[in-house]
Length: 284
Image (tube, rainbow, N blue to C red; front, side):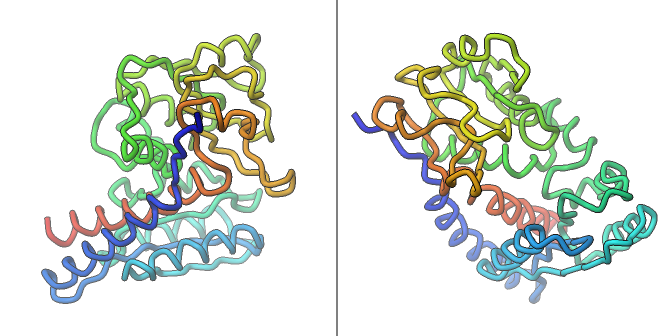
């Protein structure tokens, strides 16, 4: 029997319609105030410029405004932090996104952590991660939070399930594991150096591929009734993810397609959290 497709693209489109209504109501109740996401792009990396443009387009689709900040490749840590502090102090800005990566001379972690937690709608600050991990209010890191929203929308049960996360990055693997743990799953965190990775993956009720290597996780490692979440995307390797998906489509219980699964939920979650931030700031 064919597996259920966890369609992130469809859910993102549905959510955008709902967000458009929320933005319209916010404008009506506030005398025309609009949620604003500030995007900071440092340097001239074409992929980063594309991602920032996509985020600006998503803002436009739901009726939000985006404030585009572009800084040269020669920008220093101090100059970038000064800009972040300026945006923190701007009452009209409700979310701040610093596009990763930044040029090598910049202390990226220090700049991420300079973002006001109330405007950390991409979930990149250490304080935000700590609060989320402790079950306190915080905006979740956009990709894992998007995955959780997708699983919730399709009513995938997590309580008591064994979730295996393959990947340990600070903005994907680690927060993903904490979010699953907070949802009462039993969580194992693995990575590319894990011994007997295949054996651990075979134990998973829910497997999340977040390791950043094309098809590292093989189909024959995954049990028939598993839920498969692939957070990877490798366009130069044939548009595949971190999991060998094709052989699984007729035997697992559910899976995220690549592309069209996790990817659309990342930007959608960023916009979703910016609207939420604006509602808190403007309406109280």
